[in-house]
Each structure stands twice: as C-alpha cells, then as structure tokens.
Image (tube, rainbow, N blue to C red; front, side, top):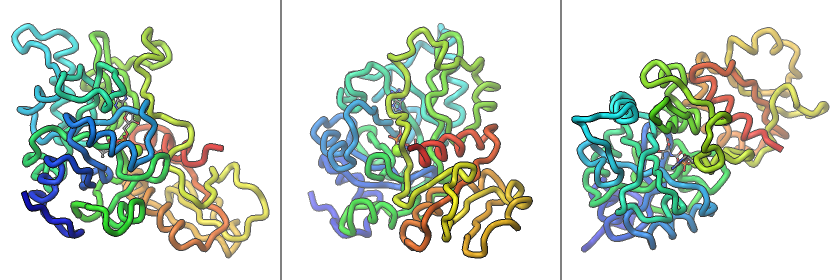
Length: 328
Ligand code: TXA
Ligand code: MG
C-alpha cells in the first residue's frame, strides 16, 4: 500500500497510516490528538513512547459514529435499559462533541490503552476532518492530546510540529475551535462522576444525567480516579504563576485574564507588562493554550501571570488547567 509521507496529506492518507500501525496526529474540535489503532498493541506502545507518557495514564479512544461504539465498548441492552444505560443514552446525545464517556472496554481494545483497566474512555469528536478520517480507519483510534507528556496541548498543526518535529505526520485541520479538552465522565447506576472538567460544563452534565457523584465520596475511589490528572500538567516553559502568587520585582510579565476581571487592577501594572484579555470564558478556553505557546515561542518575558475566571461552567475547566500549569 502506498501512503503519503509528506506533511500535507488527506484523511485517506492519515487513515492508511493508522491502518498500517503508524502513529499520526489529527485535528479535533478540542485539541489535536496523537492517534494509533486501538487494537494494535505495538502501535499503542509506540504512541506512549513518542509522547513520553507514563503507562499508568489511560488513553481515550475515538470513533466516528454511535453505530461503531460496540467495536470498542460493551453496551447494555436497549430493551431492558438500566439506569446506567439510560445515562449513557442521554450523555451520548452530546456526540459528536467534546465529551468522553468512560464505559466497559471491549476485548478488541488492547490492554495498554487502559493500562489493563476494564473501563475505557470513548469520544466522537465534532470536527469534519476528524470524522472523515475516523470513518476510514479500520478500528477506533486511541489518542491523547498531541503534546509531549505534561506540556501544553496543541491547538493547531504547527504546535504539533513544534512538539515532534517538522517531519511528523499531521492531518492539518487548522485551528481547533474549542481549544480545551473534552469533559471526561463515568456514568454509574446512581449518577455520574466527572473525572476531568472540560468544555461541557458540570451543570449541563448534572441536568442531563445527574446527580453528580463526587470522586471523594466514591466507594471505588483509588480504582477509578482518573489516573492522568497529574498536579503539574499543561505547563509552558516560561515560569507560570497565578497573578495572586506572582513573585515581586519581575520586570517583564505576560498577563492572561478575563477583560471583566482585570479592569480594576490593570491600571496599576508596570508599563513593561503585557496584558492579554479575553471577552468570555469561551474565548479564554479557545486562546489559552495558544497564548501560552506564543509566549514561550517569543521568549521575551520573565514570567506569565494568569488570573483564573470563577470556577463555574466552562470556568471550572479553565481553572483546572491553570492550577496545573502553575503547579510547583
Ligand atoms: O479533548 C480531548 O479529550 C483530547 C482529544 C484529542 O480528544 N484528548 C485528551 O486526551 O485530552 P489526554 O490523554 O490528553 O487526556 C485524557 C484524560 C487522561 O488524562 C485521563 O485522566 C482521562 O482522560 N481518562 C482517560 N481514560 C480514562 C479512564 N478509563 N478512566 C478515567 N479517566 C480516563
Ligand atoms: Mg493531554
């Protein structure tokens, strides 16, 4: 089979590479993914090695249609639906979209995708090029964000090349519209656990399929807690602080904040500080990773100072990423 190895290739070329056991990057509406065939353990092992990801951190699998879910996960009966099945059905109305649902893994998904766990996260992304590419793949595609472990997630093809080199195969779908990762949920008989806050707000998950079960009170805590949620993550190379913890005396600082939150204090900043403001949490999410990467690339400030929005709705996911990016 002949496949294009240049940087510019089609969904068809990208799918051919995946079907041959290669690792490639592809766009989604949230962030770019680093994909491998989820039924090929050598390809998945190669993916972990390229990303530098600890094997304990499970990977989300991606497919293009609810009709293909049973290739990757075990679904309940439609005629005698349990509370869990009903929750899965309501949550899956958010697909295609920025939601990952943790379900029972089908035996075809190789064990290194989930580090041997019986549950796997699955998602149908809402990006036309991703859906076309996934429809041409023989199996679902295991894909973490296409950045080296712990670094800032990529939201365009150049970001992926900055991570893995100019020759790395990337299906180029332009800038990601959403810019922050999917919400990872695990439906249960008695409610839903949010493993990772994301673009879909907890309030929306609760109203669709609640109640929310807090991870702390979950009796299986420790077994099902999202293993990838490391304290330091999404970190730029420029030192990054919460504005409230910024060391004094720094001359050149890049500040990121919601316009409505910063107005009062901005007048007091030294003239050497550069302030980037966002009109809404949607804009904050869309520009966050790109802004962090732009500061790293320019290399012209001593530190980044971020002002988190209030932790409700989409603000919760932004606060989660900012607390990890600034962890020390
Ligand atoms: O938007 C997204 O979700 C992007 C795009 C590419 O789809 N993917 C992504 O993958 O962010 P990644 O690997 O960077 O983050 C996935 C997180 C893991 O850190 C882990 O915490 C959680 O999802 N996760 C994955 N599988 C899980 C499982 N079986 N149980 C609990 N949490 C899981
Ligand atoms: Mg990631």
